[in-house]
Image (cartoon, rainbow, N blue to C red):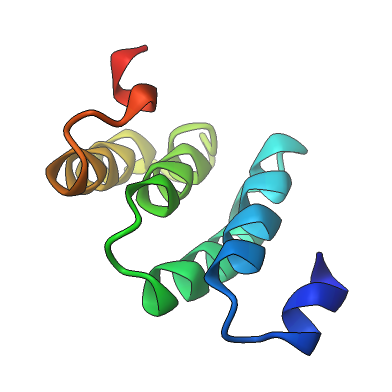
Length: 88
C-alpha cells in the first residue's frame, strides 16, 4: 500500500486502507497521518473518520483518547447515519 500511495498520492482509498491496516496492527499513532490524508482527499467518506476514531480509542497512551474518538465517530455518523460500524 505504501508503494501504491507513492505512485498515486491522490488516491484516497489507498491512504485509507494504509491507515486502517496500521490500526489493525496496533500502530495507532502511525495510522493517523495516512487517515488524515485520506480525509483531506475525500472529506465526505465516513469510514476514514471512523478509522481515525479507532486509532484514538485504542491508543490508551493519550489521556483524552476516548474524547477524541467520540468526536470522530460523531463526524462519521453525521456524514453517514447508516454507517454499519455505528451499529456495533
